Length: 190
Image (cartoon, helix red, strand yellow):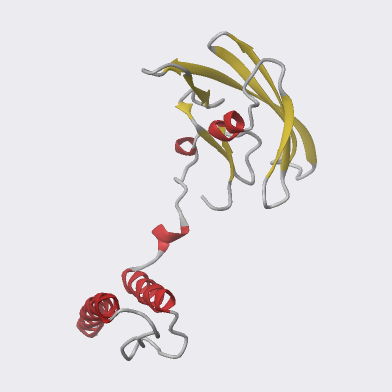
């Protein structure tokens, strides 16, 4: 998911770009940019995106004009909430994504295999170690390792430090149990 460009309709609304005849451009931190126009007629409309994308077959960059239908629903206390509709499925969404290799922005459910976040691909022991390192970073502890207990920073209350140290001890116990089970499975494979 992190590698995809995310187009968020709420961001356009925050920039006050959801009105008839609005034109502008969006730029992502990766350097990708998209020009857009908005056409509205009451509570429906179209967001048209203009950008270049590589052709799947030839790899050459080609100009793409992607028309995304818009609709809005009234809110209980006044106003409207705008939604985009996926060009592939018509599914209503506030965020559409564009991955490398695809020419259109689409809902994430249309991509197969389903995209995942990097944190979803971390194994059990790696996740535990990441949590233990996060505790060390919160404490500002740059000198200890995961084999010992964390170091208490100056001016931190002992009660707060003990909370973090107890959480670290729980995680260390879970990690050692995980590793014991893994070693047991590996020995059983002989």
